[in-house]
Length: 208
Image (cartoon, rainbow, N blue to C red; front, top):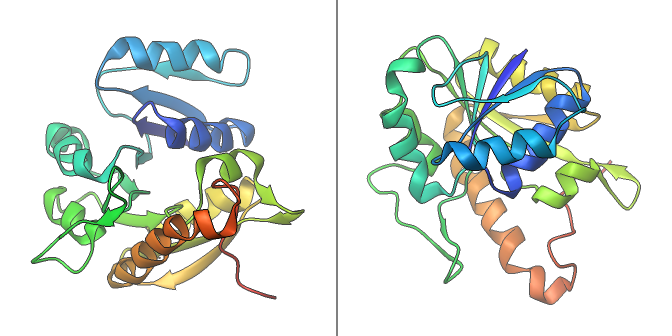
């Protein structure tokens, strides 16, 4: 598949690592083309990777802070028709580490879906995992669980396939309405880091 990643931060790197390791093509779209080009240089020799100003590909991953995500969707709206939009964000103020108000929506994913074109189904995934653990693809010898929620079955299947190919364990979390619970879980995973002392190296897992 062709995977476009909007963003140039740690989650963008992590998801590019997964996609390239499984033979997919990656395009970085950044606020500044220079940052996207830097990432292309960083991944040189690891697969087909390029930088662009416009969105292309089968999957479009929103790997930006939640506060930037709706703007990114509106900015690229004309390019999103027929593409699967993967929302990996959590509606959290990263400075204060407090949840953001997404009213009148139940979740940030539903807010993003409302901003996206009707022909660009949104899939919530990867938001409960930290970038470092995604790059490693495991924690304590156990592969990562990835919760996936979406209304469109075909869109969900594409994200599930990517996760499986990367050696992760996708868990079907149901419809996009379940993004509210996934975002709450992602937030909880962040705020318990000081108590755990794992420095964002832990994982949310379902046993067995």
